[in-house]
Picture (cartoon, rainbow, N blue to C red):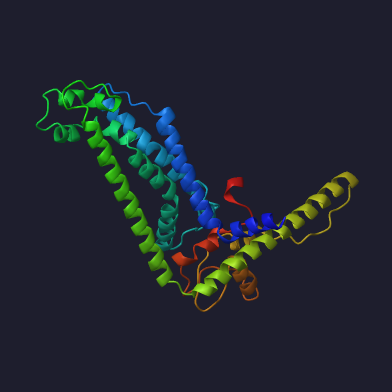
Length: 314
């Protein structure tokens, strides 16, 4: 039991890093399976090779990108009820949130493309159908090089020296793959450093903030479950016993909306979540709309990632 608790504590402390690591491993494993089992370059015409290779390289990446949006809590915080209210009264904030969501959603597709390029199969098939690459690769080679280049991924090229181009295509693919990995890591490092440098709070306060959010969400989920159970029991009891229901203090639609929007930081008020902001501002006003000085801070994006339940259950 103690070992299980230790594993659970490790997951709670590092769930974000573990989630990203798991997504990366699953994506890389999925690409290897696709490449070995499903992918078969047609090796017929240049046009078909190019189309087939690009579809396997880019379409799964697009699907993973869209799933990254769909599985993000911040996405649904932003769009739920957006058509009925002014969800983005300030365009700059919308652009900032969309950029952050895009960066987070791009992890899996970039992993897919990078692993696929390192493997080389998709790139070899697509490149063998590219007219521009054919002119470059077949310069000073056999006259039938351009015509037989689409046969190279399947090992069917018969013209002298043409089949050797497969190693060149594979090396090009791997170089591009490593360049992509290096570019992603550099951009991620720069973004992390800049966002931390612009953070309005210290390193230890960020740690405390994350602990607070974890505890708040645990208690909120427990209280919500308890209240929902009590309300359900009361309604069922009144239905069968034909009694008038007793009044239970359930938050109104407006109150739920107040704590379901995107978090903004204000240096004049130290609120650790929208719930924290709501219960403190409610005594002055029933609204927690953005006030002067409110701003969306990239380093505090984790505040919107928490919720009563995870996104997979939506």
